[in-house]
Image 1 (cartoon, rainbow, N blue to C red):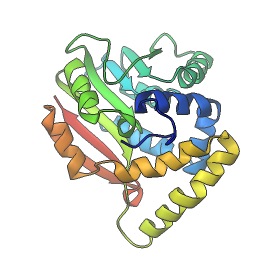
Image 2 (image 1 turned 90 degrees about the vertical axis):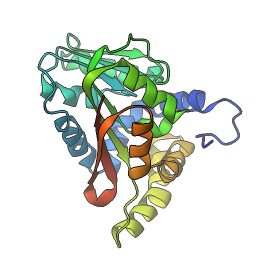
Image 3 (image 1 turned 60 degrees about the vertical axis):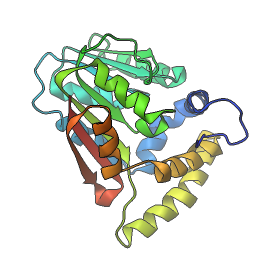
Image 4 (image 1 turned 90 degrees about the horizontal axis):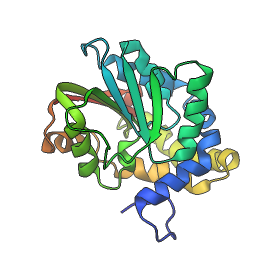
Length: 240
């Protein structure tokens, strides 16, 4: 199993939480800087894929981090958005951000495990995840939990990195993700392993049709994928 810190004997879940705690205060800056701001466009498109959910819905944002996708989800005019994450430091940054934007009456962030979601069955109208599913310790468990807490006919939208296949995007992507990104991430976040792990985790993630198969295996239907920015990222959507 791939983990952020190779010489650490703790489990993946604990290491991922520790990694994000370490980089939390620089996470938003690095996200926007390293992606040249394209990540904001990807999030908007992810939320747009939820079109058709009822107004005044209750949304769950899994692996919510600093809350950027939860904030973007306001475009769907929900009644309530709940974000969960295993990293308390990431949540602290998100809570401060949401309070400054005066959105805490709609969005609440709380510590929670995506593989053991503390809500009853059929509770949410929609579920979103951005750059989180490849960090699950057990992918099938995490997807099963999302299916469990989603109401019948509810929608999910998952944004995740993928691997471009076409020349020269593939070559540029590999050089940037493998060489440049870990160096910049280490200098700014002081955690070299975090951005080395990013490249490795994307390479190991079962993207495209393989991930669609994982969604179908736990009971989702009408599963679709859409590539973004020449295949650097993908949006996966499905219904319960």
